Amino acid sequence: MHVGKLPTALPLLRAEFGLGLVQAGFLLSLVQAAGMALALALGLAAGRIGLRRALLLGLLVLAGASAGGAWAGQAAALLVWRAVEGLGFLLVSVAAPALIRSLVPPQRLSLSMGLWGTYMPAGTALALLLGPLATDGAGWRAWWVALALLAAAAAAGAAWRFDGGIDAGAHVAGGPAPGWPAVLRASVGAPGPWIVGATFACYAAQWLTVIGFLPSIHAEAGLTSTQAGALTALVALVNVGGNVAAGRLLQRGWPPCRLLHLGFGAMALGAWVAFGMHDEVPALCRHAALLWFSAVGGLIPATLFTCAVRVAPGSAAVPVIVGLTIQCSALGQFAGPPLAAAWAATHGGWSATWMATGAAAAVGALLATRLCRPAPP
Image (cartoon, rainbow, N blue to C red; front, top):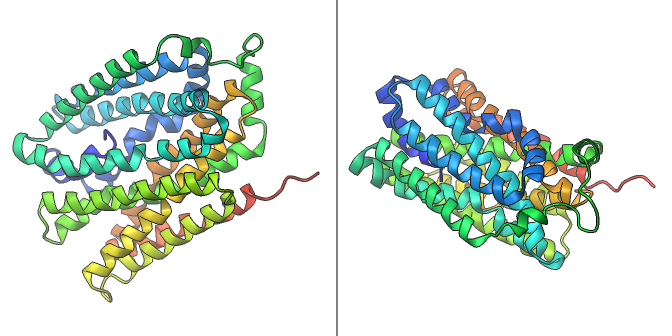
């Protein structure tokens, strides 16, 4: 929800702070700056300090940064608080998959990771639905404070639900925890984790670009903020179905490569119809293409989260590999919106967006082929 709170408020922020299009793109993506720079290191730290502590700390940082952003008096301060939010978001993101692995039996891991993969689309959809109601009624600053209180409440719930025994069991059972140099070498010494991360970057760059700018595109078309938020929330929400479906299909034996190729192909086709054929197809068809883009594209994150957990050489390496995956994903989310905005600004507007997202889809499909290639004997 902290990621998704910004798109519907973006027109208000641009008007209040005088932000240009590319500046708005950086505001959208700056929440990923911490992940882009620190995810691998924080994944390693989460394994050292304990998964429960990392989760709680991340939620509290989210709460404090959102409250701080509510009092920002200029664009620079808002950007700084947005980057701090990214740090809290990152801590939660690297700790949660490792917690899931420690809490569920192996035969349910794929399904559980599919459910975990819904945190971004489900939270984004809720923020897009509730954001216009909050900002129209009380302003964007009150919306920031409300989400700060929600993060604090989530921290209290997590502290009550998970006891300290989870931290004690965060390392590999049956012996002393390996030192961090050994964990780091085992985690990043093989090509598999890097390919998973790069593939995730190709997905994340596309999804955040489309979801992030869609309310502004709708607003330019004459829709109210509530209408634009609801339509964008629906596009985000159908992504949940793709994540859950991927978990079930993986559990039934579908190969990851098939799901990844299907997802990237659907995203390329959906973006082309929605943006590249903007003047040739009616509005209803364009929105249906965006729903297709997000729903079938939702097969990708759950599949990649499962791959990231499975390639980990032990429990101690899970948060490190998830951190590497998130670091690559954050790079895609950080670079995607401003690059797509710059491309659109110099190539005739939003109708050119599909070329940028399509290129990311093509690279992602190639990486998926490499990821699923059998290892040499």
